[in-house]
Length: 299
Image 1 (cartoon, rainbow, N blue to C red):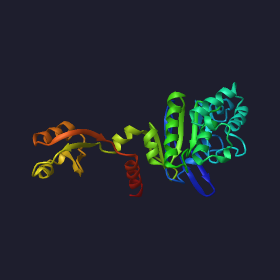
Image 2: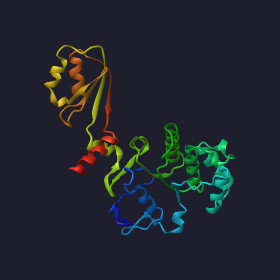
Image 3: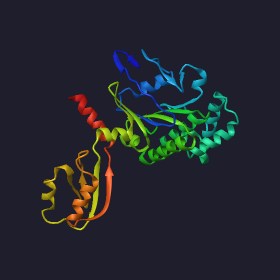
Image 4: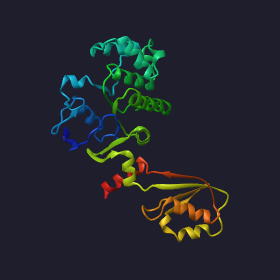
């Protein structure tokens, strides 16, 4: 899919798919092409080339559009109306049956039931974002497409919205695609991602699989007491363990795949009288993957 706006090629032939049941993170810096992609997915913009299908049908199909819920910026809420009145308005547009029951349910899902009768103009940014999610779900769609759902929201509000998205995906059985430039946010709730930069997809697939492929697995071993004399000298003689340093009471290793196992490292420590309290693994973070991608682009 390609798209040029003015003299700038915003999308340079991108392609990805979102599977049923995914919480799919569409990740990238500001200006990377995220919002343009989402507007094409919703039929608000036309791609210059390529095609879009959702639930196996063309986005121009009216029945398909009715199966999609979306939240963009601006949020589409009316300040002079109450939360319930906003949802009633959109329920009428979507011809929702038993609208009162549905409105009550989605307000409960986003934690806004007690504010149903309050004017939207009095709401904080975080509350508006939650109500925008309720609006996107009022017609019980199969797919949710969200553009920066936590933008401008304080940290506690971001946590609430992330929890809501997880609950929607699990309890309501929705497929969720949302864009974000927040690496930590995507890492916390998404199972699959696409990373776009300068109009091109740079990283795409299962998040855990990408971590395994692009980042070395780390081993963190928490110890009690002091390490024996010349311990670090012996570690240097065993480069296959990939010793990276000691932080407080934790030893950090990054062994090359196939060169040393966690058991090899533990046995080495035990043989030298090191008291082990806990052994854990750490995977490459999205930030590390993203940094690696940018470094490859710049070379």
